[in-house]
Length: 277
Image (cartoon, rainbow, N blue to C red; front, side, top):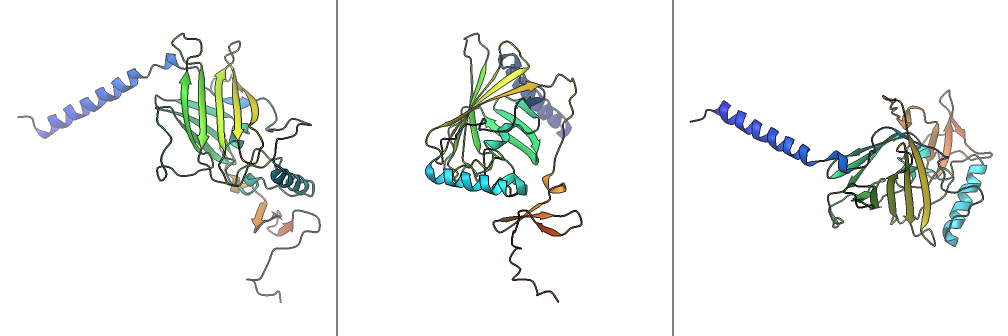
């Protein structure tokens, strides 16, 4: 009869063998080389100079109001001004470097800007979850699939669709708005440049009720050539000097006093404070 220690050893050995078998089943050579640190090569903007977004009249008015607010010194309703995570699609502007980690069932995207941000892209063949099986998030719920485009038995492209968002969110700090219903659908294609393995392209398409048609952007990123790149981490509240009270934004001075962010701005409602003596 086996004693308890022998039974425990057999159980541990069985678990280790299962782990090793699972690890062997994941053939890294079938996947593109997305390892390393990836940085953007252009300004984190969706609109090129002179380009006009295909906004509905309602949301063109919202954009115009945001643009005017920025001219007057305000944040233009950019949520990250108040430390709200960028979420999708803004986080894929890659304000700070990105890391992509591929596992058999899930691909992870890690970025640290304003706050540490991450995405889980499920590639296990699952369908969209039913109501109550997910939680709306700024980054959304992402389902992806790997594609072998040239038929050589290796994956070339990761296609992703992301839904189930919560807000507020935006495209970038220009004030370009997403619809407040948060029913955006974001589609992406990740692939490495065939001529240069240190260049990656990300095709982004946003389908959103604030737009009259799908809105597209091609993002180019490059791999850091340093063997051990520095990964920075940021906590927005450590150095953020903007304060939102109601729908207005104010500035916190270096000596700790509330200041206007725009010319002739009224102070916040002080109804719950005693009048100054």
